[in-house]
Image (cartoon, helix red, strand yellow):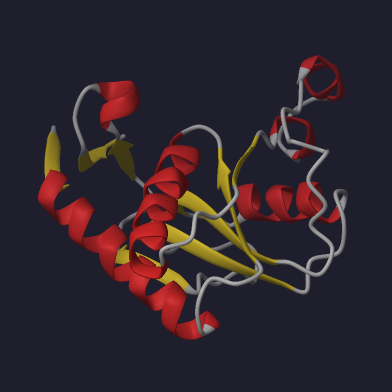
Length: 176
């Protein structure tokens, strides 16, 4: 059984609020780079990038990051098959990176993303923006920008749906 906890309007409002928070905390968008973790994090990063462009009248680089090769829960064989699609031509050195993902759970995806980013240069700062923070961290990782905190049990599953892939925007929670 699934329960919707955010609809399209709720997601839109959360991303807009997060965008304004990013501008405020960084005193503008100068030197910012958005990196979205594939798959849904990348679409959310693009949406935040569009909002930031409207707020600050300046388009930001929005990169996608496939962390498959950096995951610690894959076998060596699976890692060897993974193809990282990170744009290595973009130098992150000295930039402020806003790392975007859909759901923050144990923190392991973010750890893998940090490893991937650090392999591409030395940003001056990395901040984390997540649409949903559901708790249950296994690593000391905390988001800087949060769309919504949703306390969950370990038996529950949070699914973020985006129109680009799923045909509609929604956040649902269900029992495993």
